[in-house]
Amino acid sequence: MRILIVKTSSMGDLVHALPAVHDIRQAIAGVQIEWLAETAFAAIPRMHPGVDRVHALAWRRWRKQLFDRHTWRAMGELRAQLRAQPYDRVLDLQGLLKSALWGRQASGPLMGFDMRSCREPLAALLYARRAAVSLRLHAVERCRRLASAHLGYPMPSGEPVFGIVPGKGNWKLRGGPSAALIPCASRPEKIWPEARWIAVGKRLKSMGLSPVVIWGTEEEQVRAERIAAGCDGEVPPFLNVHDMVALLAQTQRAIGLDTGFSHLAAALGKPTIGIYCDHEPGLAGIVGPGGVASVGGKGQVPSLAEVLALLERQRVPA
Image (cartoon, rainbow, N blue to C red):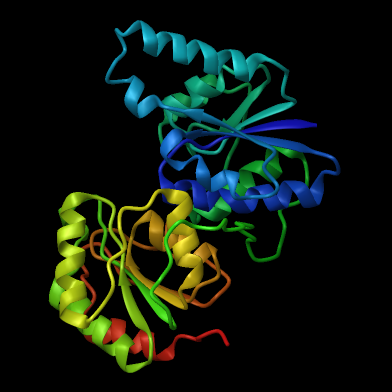
């Protein structure tokens, strides 16, 4: 059986879809699994040994250059890849019009959520088969349930297995046990005060862990440098997704905002605290095998005391 998973973006969403790969591999002998992902995040499914091939989609760039002939040539080449051999199932685990339209480019029956389950209900009109999966479930469970419904195996009862195998990165920590601080946020409403990050960094230092402050944009780099200066931490250079996973794999734990890096750390088995300042963690909270916690919510910015209390209680691997 050949299966194409469509989950294009963003980073945390791809991480949440990874356990479905493990489930499929356990349920179907000899299955071949391919994945369609945005170029910026394609490294994530590539680090899962259960994914045989990843097709890179540069839609975020292409949509800004739709009248460029090079864009149409690139889109045509991707479509040819997706139609080179038929798939037995094309699974849209994202539930958006964008993902459904690209899923339709593949040769094979496109399957996804029903209209009540889709993040964008009109996407359901493009599916050959639909399944109802409650929007009230965590994103990880929604992906696992959709795959089991369309591939005909019972929903596994075990904990999710993310299966990421980090590669060798191009940047090394300066030595000694460390903890990742992840103050990155896609919106200003998600930001947690810098003074609290510095206080967390100082507490980590007292626990024998060197803070490593993560960033992804120039604005976040400036913030990371201020936080690191306040707690004697370390700021890495700009890292691509592959190198960031390798860095996170070297750390002993992570404290981060609701961002893809935090979900990656948890998926790697690191004890992780997720700080939520503008979003309820119930549907996309931190999930992982290493001891995780999510604190805060919509209009409920966590206090420093809450985060420090979780830090003290969290299990640290030997």
